[in-house]
Image (cartoon, rainbow, N blue to C red; front, side, top):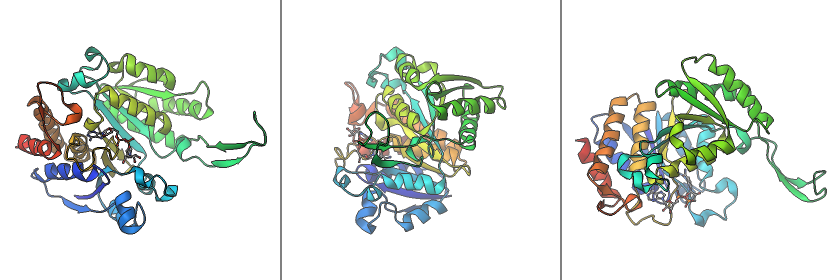
Length: 356
Ligand code: NAD
């Protein structure tokens, strides 16, 4: 099992070190190879995703990714910015299915901005299509408007597009995932306004015929955004496009109280995957030893389950995380009165001890 370890920038190096420590504490054999990505790679090689990093990623069974980005790179040309590395990896590896679970741990119910009874026991899974939609659709650009409300004015435009096979494959991923959970899928669209999402709705409905054991409903994205804060536990698996998924998964992640707790996985059709915390590089706390490593540790658990066929080891890590929370250990982002504040390394050590 070969794992490409790409720590990246900011807190990326700190949190990935803890996840690697946890992986090494398992009785499994891995080949771990580290390479720079993002701003670190730009500094080292003049590009956020150097050829050597990309070929390592391609040759690995899975990628454990920290985070990239720093405000100091905001003035670089867009292709050289750290965040381009993630887009490059998604594209090169065909990582079209993004899994973002939003789980509210019993001990952290009070960290949510919603009432505890709304989030206690929350366990939903957002599946976001990752390689299509308005983020990648061509043509896009700036031009002088030939028509519209202000002909002759400067305008910018993007193209929202999805093809039938793109929708089919993500729908299948969602129905398969739902089969392993409570067998319910909500497909989120904007079919009342957008042609792209009328096709989305039609295709998801067709694919559903192959999964009669799974219940499907459709919801407009504006309503879904509302329902996520009104009654989040009414959802189980949500499947949606790239842009809606981007927004809804961040909204869902905050329901759980801390972005420092939430893992994610991006998979291709060969089950090769990129595993990373849902948060960014947090430059505001980088180097202070206070970042929460649990999202990255839980991402490593997802990696074991989805790409490396080690479901039992994944269960062990998840149980160890629950155990350290039950012991009252908290990094500052999830700290509350009566619990014990710890740093990044202590939290990683505690998970390793709980594994044993
Ligand atoms: P962020 O997620 O990095 O930080 C948002 C807030 O959450 C900050 O206050 C931060 O301190 C806190 N936070 C994040 N992770 C934490 C953790 N593990 N433990 C404790 N606190 C944590 O988002 P941002 O500030 O908007 O972006 C910072 C940089 O990260 C930007 O350059 C952005 O482009 C980049 N970014 C990268 C990714 C990625 O690598 N996948 C994702 C999002 C943002």
